[in-house]
Amino acid sequence: MNNRFLDIYRIVMEYEGGYVNHPNDPGGETYKGISRRAHPNWKGWQLIDQKKPVPEQLVQEFYYNNYWLRLRSDEMPYPVGEYLFDFGVNAGISRAVITVQRALNIKADGVLGPVTIGAIQKQDPQKLMYELLKDRVGYYTTITMQNSRFQVFFLGWIRRTIEVFDRLMTKQKK
Image 1 (tube, helix red, strand yellow):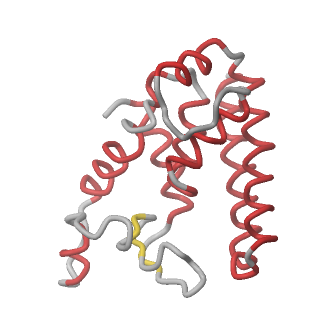
Image 2 (tube, one colour; image 1 turned 45 degrees about the vertical axis):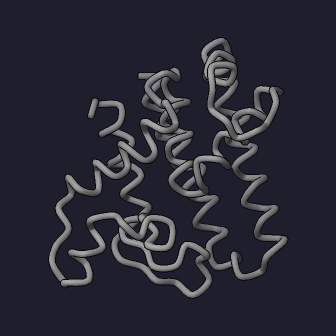
């Protein structure tokens, strides 16, 4: 695990919290953002069921392997890789990939292959970040308008989207 990953991981964990089982969350039962429904075989669930503490290393390894590496964030310029990682954690990898593909005006198929990575690398990172910010806000607005059970999460999603954007962009300027 490298410093880029560890820096954004710490930020993401500020938003993911601990154990949650909100009735309006389609992810169902989660621990630090890890959905039991989507990841029933994650080793942390055994510890949680036994009411034992989950080592932070186990959570870090999960996010590194299942999000950072799958999103190929190291191959993207800073802060684009970090922002897509955060969005992938919150909305799913496929949604994050489709969103960046739409922002780049390339085929939005949800596949993160050489065409998408190449287009990301050629784009001005700052310009792409503003497109991603706009598209993330649009995505959360659309799904909330389509499904009223998401209203309880809407302001938190928007706050996270803007705060993570601001933190990444501020660090970039230093």
